[in-house]
Each structure stands twice: as C-alpha cells, then as structure tokens.
Amino acid sequence: MHLQHKFIERLLSGKNIRYILTLIIFLSLVILSGQIFSQERFFGGETNIKPFTLHGSAHVSGQFYNTNGIRNRRAPALGEGGIDLNFSVFGIRSGINLLYSSDNPKLRQNMNKFSFSGQWKFISLSVGTVSPTFSKYSLSGATITGGDIIINPGIFYLEITGGRSKRAVKPDSGLGFRGAAYAQQMYAAKIGLGNQDGSHFFLSAIYAKDDTNSIKNTNSIKPQANISLTPDLEIRLFNNRFALKGQVTVSAFTEDLRSKKIDVSNSGVPSFLTNIFTPQVSSRINYAGDLGVSLNLTNMSLQFGYIRIQPGFHSLGISDIRNDQQKYNAQTQFRIFNNKLNIGCNYSRSEDNLLGDRISTQQTSNYGINVNARITKRFNINSSYTLLVNDVNPTTVYSDTASTVIKSSQNAQTIMLQPTLSFQTGTEMHNISLTGTYISLSNHISGISGISNQNFDSKTYTSSLAYSLSFRSGLAINLVGNYLKSDAGNTSTSNTGGNLGVTYAFFNRKITSNFNFGLHRNFTERTTGGINVSTKMRQIIFNLNFSYRLTHSDNLTLSARRLDNSTIEGGGYSFIENEARLIFQHSF
Picture 1: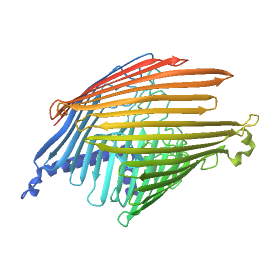
Picture 2: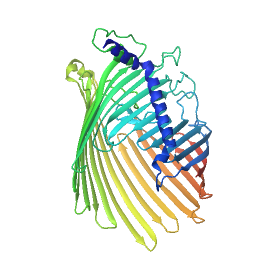
Picture 3: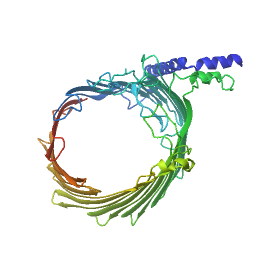
Picture 4: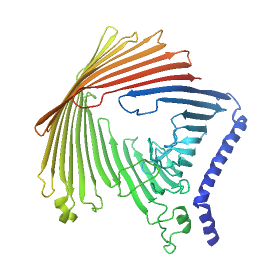
C-alpha cells in the first residue's frame, strides 16, 4: 500500500500533469491516424463517405482610423488575415483555423490564434487555440493555447483540455498600459454520463497555476493558483416538460504563491493531494452554485432558480465574477386564446453580506410583467412594467457605527408601450411602430450623523416612431425619429434626432449597398448656485457599406464611418472620428 501510495503521489504531481495530458493527446492522434488506414474494413459496399473533401474560407482586411480633436482610441492602421479550413479524409472530419493580426503589442494578451480540429465517430480533437466550457463557475470562456479532446460514445462523456491560458506580460507604466500578467498553465478534465442538453451527471476538475519565474522582480501583481471540483446534475422527465438541474463548484484558490506555506503533514490529507495544491497563508476554499426547476406545459411555463456565490470565491477558469451574493428568481408565462395573448411575470431578489461581517447589506428586488397581444394579423401591441427596489442598510452587529454608515433606498419604475402595424400594398411591405417609455427614479439617502437627508428624483420620457418600406427589387428604406426629455433635480435634458437608412441591391444582387445617416441634437440645462448653465451639442453620423460579389466564391466589402461631434453652445468636446475597412474573402 505504501508503494502504491507513492506511485499515485508522483503520478499526480503538478510536474507530471502536463506530460500525462501530452501523452493522451498524442495517443488520440495515433488512434485517429490509424483509423484512416483501416477504413477499408468499413467500405465493403455502397457508401456516401468520400475519400477526401475540402472547404473553407480565407480573408484579408485592412482598417484605417484617424481623429481630429481627441486622442486616437485605436491604432491608425490595422491589418488582419485568417484561414478557416474544414476537410475530411474517409469520413474523418478535421479543421484548421488560423488568425493573424498586426494588433499584437507586448502590453496585452495575444489575439492571434491557430487551431486544428479533427473528428472521427465519437472522438473529437482540437489543438491550438481552444475555448472549452466545462461549467458556469469553473471553466467557461477562458482561451487556452494547447489542446482539447472529447470522447463521447453513447451516453459516456470524457473531455480533457490543457495548455497555456495566459502568456507573460511585463509591467509597463507607459502609454497603453493594459496590465501585467504571469504566464499561466491550465489543465481540466470532465467525465460523466448523459447528454449535454438533457439528463446527465458530470464531474469536472480544473487546475491552473501562474509561473512565478515568468516575470522577475515585480510586486505589482501576485502569482496565483487554483484547483476546483464541480459536480453537475440535470434530470429531465415527461418528454422534457420537467427539468431539475444544479451544479456546485468548490474552489481552492491561492491569491499569492509567494505567501508562506502551511504545514499539513499531520492533518491526514494525502500528500499526493498537497503536491497538486499546496495550502498557503493566502489560500481560501469557497464554493459557488445554482439550482433550477422548470415546468413547461402547453399553455403555461414555470421556472424557479437559486444562485449562491460565497464571499471570496474565485476561479481562474472564468472572467471576473461578483462574489458574496445570493439570488432567488421565479418566472411564469401564460399563453391563451390560441397564443394571441401572452402574459409573462418575473420576480427576483438578491442580497450580499452573506456572512454578516460587513458594515452594510444591499438587497435588490425586481418585479416585472410583460403583455403581448396580437389584436389582428396586422396589428400587435406589446407592453411591460418593471419595478426595481434597492436598499442598503447598516448591519445590526455594527450598531455602534451605524451613525456613520450610509442608508439608501432606490426605487425605479419603467412603463413601456409599443403598438406595431404591418401591412402590404401590392409588392411593397410596410411596417410602422411607435414606442413610448416612462422611467421614474426615486433615491433617498440618510444615516450619516450631522448630515441632512438627501432626496433625488428624476423622470424621463422617451418616444420613438419607426417606419420601414421594402420592395421586391431589393430596395429597403428605414426612417426613425426619437425624442427624449429628462428632469433630474436641477438638471434638465432633451434630445431629438433621427436616422435614415437605405439598402439597395443591384446588378442581379451582386452589389449590395447600405447607407445610413443620423442627426441628433442634445440640450442640457443645469442650475448651480442660482446660475443657469446650458450646453448644446450636435452629432452627425455617416455609415456607408458596399459588398461586391466578384465571383461565386469571392466577395469584397468596403465600409466607412464618420462621426462629427460639435459643441454649439457651452462647454464640451468637438471632434471628428473617421474609420474605413476593406475586406476580401474567398470561399472554397
């Protein structure tokens, strides 16, 4: 038993994990390659499998940008090229994706990518730039330069991925600083039974760690490490009318790998586990999860959900997430009169300070109702009402400091009404819609000793009238006018504007053109210390787009945009922004 324990300890050490993953991917490639040469076993008669197929696309583009009056918000010139290939060899599907961009400074993560994917029967393999999704709170959205393999025969599911999730970016306080980063490796595995979109049980784990040697002599960022385990369960019954699902991610996260290590030799924890993740002073274990229940009937649907993210929860496999919160939500929808009337209701309530160790607690409630009525085949009315209530209250355990803690209450109501009329005259289609919205906001602040209570109220009215006309010839015209009026305390704002869009296809639709013109005027009046200060701004927008189908496989697209922002009265920035882009794409 001792020798077996030692073997497992060495096998699962952080140093050997990458070698194990590399071996698995290599063996998968051998299996896929071997299948190519053994295909004659499966071609005993007629088959629709072709020996070789190839299709895909390639593109090159150039982008130009300049401004007058403000600093450039992007590079003045940008080049990009990419290739997407999809091919099959005796039924084995594969693909290659390659992207190159000149927008690759050393001050941020590389956006260039290369990927290869192959599939045969129940085996899928991707190498290069991959973005696997394992679960909501463990691995979702992270880009990995490495590989991903999926083995899915029937209801069995196994997925393994790994590689570099970040490259090293040295600290630089110069212009264009985007944030330093340590080089980071990430490995993950997911195994289970069932269907991804149906009943299933999956268990996934991820391991990520920064390379402390990738950046020298810096205290601006901290090297981190993370290991997490996620069970994911979903049960669907009665032809998918009833569903119960839930997942919980338990995450062990070390904020600073340079912090002191904790001696756990006498804790009873197997040493092979501590070799994978060594507890340190800055290490924390937390969890995040959700639970959902849904019922879908012919004329009614119900959904209930609960989300809880513990304080301090962190996972390197997802982007930044707001922790220390829990949320309850419920939704229902009724479809009556042969779906001519749809009524939807929703409610949610969220709160933070789950451990009660903060000086204040925020609670937010959302109420909503939406009604859609199809009066006739041509006339439709959509309306909605939402109420948001947000309260921040001092925590009772900090009653001695309550006089210095802000107490606030916010109420926001939104009412929307949108009638729509659609009809046809000859070969022309007409669509007219009117949208009206009313928003009221009430904000009350109190609780600070020696400071008077503050009340802030605002009301906003918006309206929009849109008309579209389309012809069979390929000509389409869109016209939109809008108006906004807002009163908030000592500030009043009004905005009027409109947009005209024209689309036309000619030369047997080989050329498609689109032109859009927008004009908006904004007026703001503010009273400060008995003095009225007003500002008038004007904004003109031009958009032009041409798409020329050179051949059945080649397409050329030219787009241009101009923004002219002018100050007519008062303070403000006047500037002009121009942008143009030319794209050539070949498909095969």
